[in-house]
Image: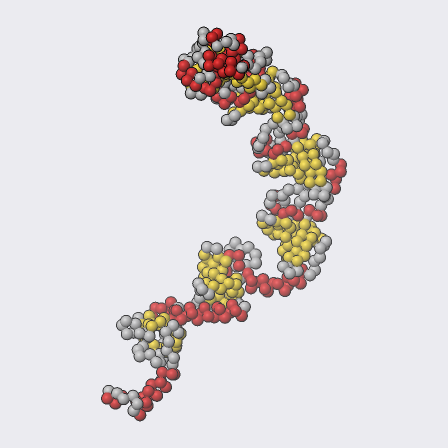
Length: 577
């Protein structure tokens, strides 16, 4: 120890130089992959020699066997390992062969992805959405989506399992360490050049003979042409009639002629049509007239209506909207009225040649019940009906011999009571007689009234005038005032608290118990608006004015039953002077 105490001695410098030369041969750093040479093998472990490490790294022999490195478990063989710790808490070196293999495998995948090169792999197992593929060279696992297994649908892939084959790397997530591969891309790349040459043969307008039905999809039908090309016939190009799914028209293996309608050389796709080889039914639409009735066949039922086909002209499809089913019933379900295959009468209401659209109506084949109603029951007629529906402010009344629901507002139920309170007395199936108040056939509306079938108690005021005195009976009294009914009238009116008396002390509704007969004056009268206001106070003022005019002297007013009359007479005498 004394020899190296002084580091500036020639011996110390020589030792430092020798040590640096030795360490420079192998750069030891945690997290790096290094090569270890097997120098000892036991039943459970393999001991490695790594130049520059103070102790021998140890590997579990089962780890090497699981990695497929059984043949390499020999003295003198070199195995790459990941140096995780140069020295752990026990002073031992920690290495991993499996982690080194994964890192090396990932580096190779990244290199292949950046160079756009295929890799060799084998399909190990199926999983949700696809398969798991093992990279043969490194053992790394990758995901193969189901859509990328082949360029055509495969029901069984057992013949592809564990077979070495090429895959294209289509996605690499460096952060998560996930890789996604495609077998379809490899297959398509081989076929692409040949397919381009085949598509060069086709041009728009060509007729393809005897193309075979190969498969269906929700958007069309696939045909195979001469065993070398698959073409698509879109759902809209199958027939002039409405088609829900290709299997309604075609069967697998059938042969049909096709017309080429599009050629896409970039996408290597050919679009074809079957219906364009058939006669266009719309060309014969001139044989049909507006507002005439024709037979239509129901071919499809929807929530909003029915698709129908002109019976005499198969292929010409039109929509019968639910609003054109009935004159009177709203939101009618076409599924309850018809079934597929039914032949029904409809009127053609519109023909649009540019948009190739025909509009039809089923209700126009029947007479408008509102026109019938107007002829049979003009405004002012009394008709019998039945309450069929009710809401918070009205009744709907079905007229007995016509399928029409008339509208009856609660204000037209009674002259006497509150309309909303009166409405509560009615329920479904009640029989009532009503008067027709309004008919709007164009808007399909009929308004009726119940109170109009009874004498109008408001007629009592037809010969009455403002300030006229009438006698009323007090029905009830509350804080708002007095509810009174004029003699000879069946209507009740409210005399407000402020209109009970001139003196505020006398204007108390509690003075009355109900049943008393008193006089009052008509304060307001509007016959057109059916508005009447009554006032006891006004009557007192009228009588007081008459007394002043009749008894002009001060003394003569002393015997009058008005406490303030003498004072009023003094005021009047002063004014006269």
